Length: 124
Image 1 (tube, helix red, strand yellow):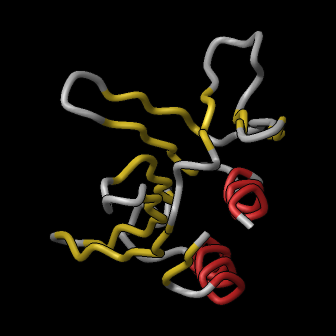
Image 2 (cartoon, helix red, strand yellow):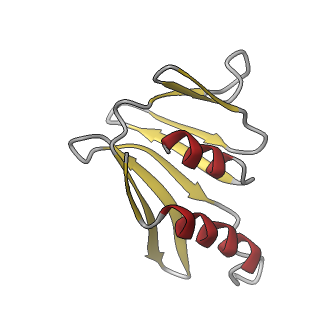
Image 3 (tube, helix red, strand yellow):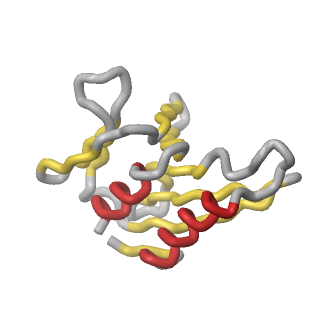
């Protein structure tokens, strides 16, 4: 189910994938990313391209759809956690608002559809 969820996420344009730890942060935009799985490794992006990531599917134990209220807007995303509830990966839906700071219904629907398909909290 992890591969299916990640596939559905990267099928959307303008989703920012973030891997962050104390020493580094990596950000990759989902636009036109390929995704494939070989054994436990899920590769997002072209292995020979400028940017890609490898996700160890055995270490991702859960995911949650999140909405964070910020001044003037709400941030929409999905966070992926290991067995210690440490965040391993996050996917944030960007460009959710127009120039007038109004939520774009089609973008919100894409997020809501995924949330409904998988539920707010997922165990792998």
